[in-house]
Length: 202
Image 1 (cartoon, one colour):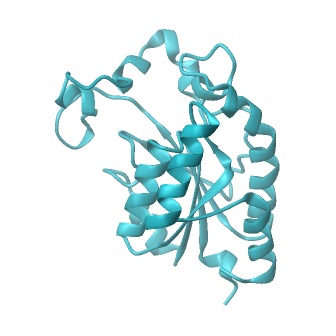
Image 2: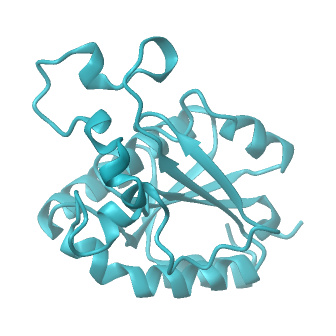
């Protein structure tokens, strides 16, 4: 069995507000990685991997779509609900540079940090017979990490693509990748992903 048919790349939160200079939550490290991300994603798709783009649709409600800050206002981090609104509507869109193929890729909104929570992602992976889940995007230590933890909790063989994730700075990124590699998600770079897809080695 071709492992690429069992492999999904979950691309997390590559939205304009995070990837474009001047965006509400722009990270220079994200802007720097975008050309490589776009190039490598296209190669992965061409080798048969299923690309799944997930991005935040902030809400401030109760129940299954509540943001952490709507539950506990004492939290000091970013309040996702502040990203919502007409003044940031364009910032919530996916980066135009992404090589999205609407006929082959899957696009999915998420409502909190993990791409699994209150979305059909698990059902999609089951229907497609996915066994290997690769995670990339923004932020390494928040939405990517939450998604990877949930992937392995659902018994997927889980990977972080090291040169296709970004966060505030390289030190924070390195620390969290090392923690993930130790406990639940193997860390490999995008060239290794492509080699494994080509050589059927996942």
